[in-house]
Image 1 (spheres, rainbow, N blue to C red):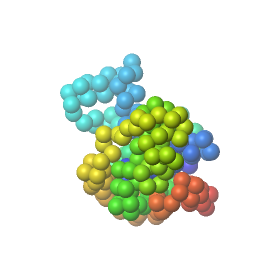
Image 2: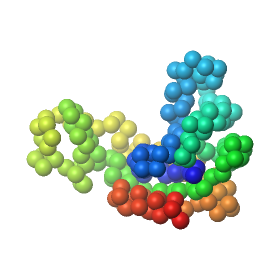
Image 3: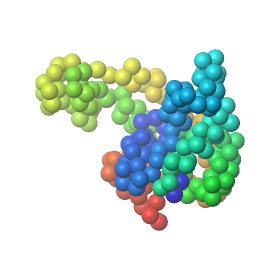
Image 4: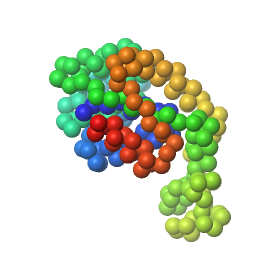
Length: 213
């Protein structure tokens, strides 16, 4: 079963993909991870990726498709596509890649979120600088203000890009990149929506219901 997970940054795609890998033996195919790995690899594709990235250019659809094709061989129990496709051209290329291997896309699952609420979810998170314990200003603050529940440290840190301006810009980019492919898959009856604002368990249950239907 091959699926695409869609949703803006912070919607929980990575969390759900890891759960599907653990529970169903599926394989998450993240183009970002694949390109980073290819750049370090001693292979013909790796050399191409290094050359393009060192010039500060975007890796071509042809190279990305070749990487996807390679990694599909390792996804015997199903692939979870993350960050690909982003254009109709890439969507058409993916159809060909799958067809060449006797596979078809089963579902395109979109995690639907309230953007204002998602901004609060992301901007409010921080971690203990000592042990890495995760917290949130509103949903999961330390029991004692300024002191880590786990290790007692008073040092906390936030990710530099966890600010409202950056988060909203990333959401705008997601909308711009994702909008073109949704109609492509809607015409094929593949798009299913899940409330991405629920708990991790509720979102997981909704995804499982789709995959088991």
